[in-house]
Image 1: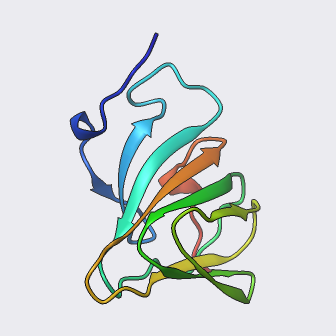
Image 2 (image 1 turned 90 degrees about the horizontal axis):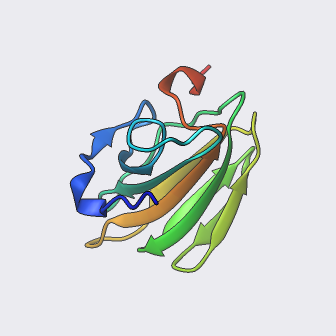
Image 3 (image 1 turned 180 degrees about the horizontal axis):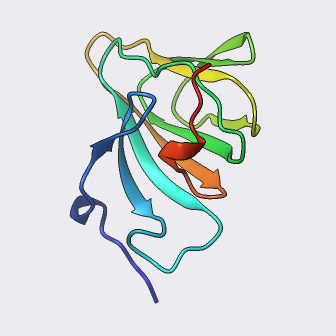
Length: 120
């Protein structure tokens, strides 16, 4: 049985500019086909618009409110919202909070990789 405590995982900044904490991936468990991370953006923060050729992503909003853009379509998102980001879809999320960070879970299959993040 593999159980990884959240606070034992060291946060880092991804290629798109969000801060993530890998909860389960190949760096801390025998994971082969997916990754799970907690991501956060400071109040008013945004990720750089990008896409992943291989990874399909799910975002699940935990705290804060944001504006999610996928392939030119934008929608407001908040706690309890689950978002599908297909592989190859341009996307960006922006925190709309003045005082709270935007926190969300990010599940990627295949697992997240800096090398699968494209900006142009």
